[in-house]
Amino acid sequence: NAGVTQTPKFQVLKTGQSMTLQCAQDMNHNSMYWYRQDPGMGLRLIYYSASEGTTDKGEVPNGYNVSRLNKREFSLRLESAAPSQTSVYFCASSEGWGGQPQHFGDGTRLSIL
Amino acid sequence: QKEVEQDPGPLSVPEGAIVSLNCTYSNSAFQYFMWYRQYSRKGPELLMYTYSSGNKEDGRFTAQVDKSSKYISLFIRDSQPSDSATYLCAMRGYGQNFVFGPGTRLSVLP
Image 1 (cartoon, each protein chain N blue to C red):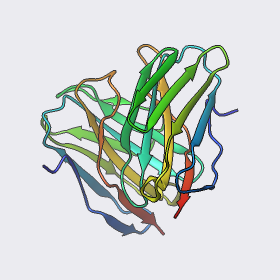
Image 2 (image 1 turned 180 degrees about the vertical axis):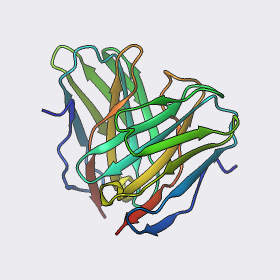
Image 3 (image 1 turned 135 degrees about the vertical axis):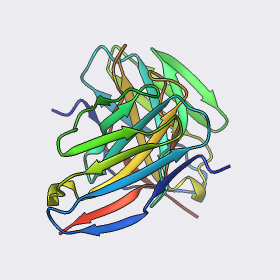
């Protein structure tokens, strides 16, 4: 019973490099979310996908892109990483949009030098 | 002013104490309120979910919402060392995404 699985768990990038964070859920949830967590800031929504085939911007979308590959998978891409994107990234899922994010992955710790 | 505020702590209490964790908010449109628990280096886990004002109880946990004061609370009775974690509140209005507080770090000492 995996829930929400994120890969990788840790990553160090240089400024300007690109990478994709992967997320998969096995609960047949319709909605998926990407958050970043910074000290003193709380979780901030980057992008979300209310249902398969749709994606929408959250509070802090600049510098990121997402793909809802299928109902299970939702990836987050940094095209040209910047030090300001150093953070812990969490993926979450819920049965439907408007419901509370019910299940979170354990995060990807990303450092950009 | 942040939309949702929490005292960051750390809050240290002895085992068995009653813990009160609080959030204040500024947006009167918020109707849905949640509490999450987050252990170190783990993702948040949903603890409590309430709609509008009132109380909700689940085992040792009680969530209270006072919309007139824009204030929500989470009470933990008979606190245990295993309750040591960061507690996040989150809230939203109709048709909105959830907004999270920065979290309060709780330490329950044996």
